[in-house]
Length: 377
Image (cartoon, rainbow, N blue to C red):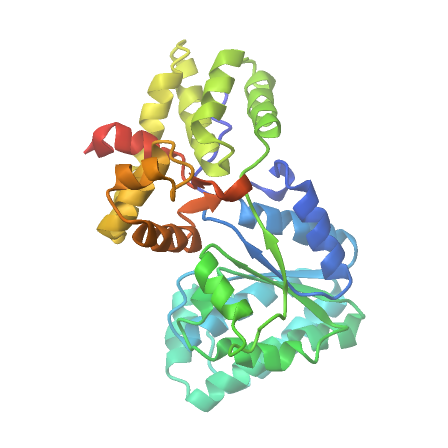
């Protein structure tokens, strides 16, 4: 029996990138030219898969691709572990010259902090690093942030360094963006950086506030929903390739439910595949199971919203695209100024997406279905 080909728990592999050709080409072009970029899009919109595809393409063009996962960083020790791990992945199993560069860098880091035996769990490295002095930690940080210069000197290669969920990095220290810029500004011919994030408001504050060190230091690239036709074709091809062609009506119904949302489409397709194993079309049941699977996360998001934000999001989920119109205000039972404030905050936090003409739509298509089903509790 063929395994379920639809994965939704983790990002798709770069080779499975759907659509995004325009964004991929732009990021590759800017990186090769040494420009910094910031990639912003709601969670589960495929940023990691896109960045993986960009990194793979740049590696084919003889650049060194480095991916730093900043999500949920909490302390400077954690930042050092993330950076060290990222550079080890990029250089540790590469050419002999780059492997030698990595060993030299790692020795310099190890003289500043004890980072544990290479290959052991990151928890060991973090505990060891915690015992180091603050001066040692900063020395290790500066060595790792200067790694692109060492790569350039040893191999002549340019580095492409991604900081994913970059806004989380500043949880460790609020001045890390300034420290990073103090290095990046001297690496024009050695590195290009991509700062990615899912919190639009936090990313805007970092790059659009004159008081922040990275003000206007990276070109913005936004990530929206996938092209519906391309997404539908990709899902349909996956069914057909495994000998289980799916009815066009099921695919069109799936697309109507998810609205181009990458991860939600994978979830529904995953459960639709399970339904077809039982020889049932089962789109309605697949949707129900997918929403039930997502319910805990939806509940947590709902709990984090204010009462006004909940009413605003509910109105948008019911199809009120122009939230400042009279019908929307009546539905939400709020005044225009209050609605405008809630609309702005929900867009900034990635819960609403702006579309043509100032209209909005709910970023997560499951919210409307979840609310309609009584929050499935």
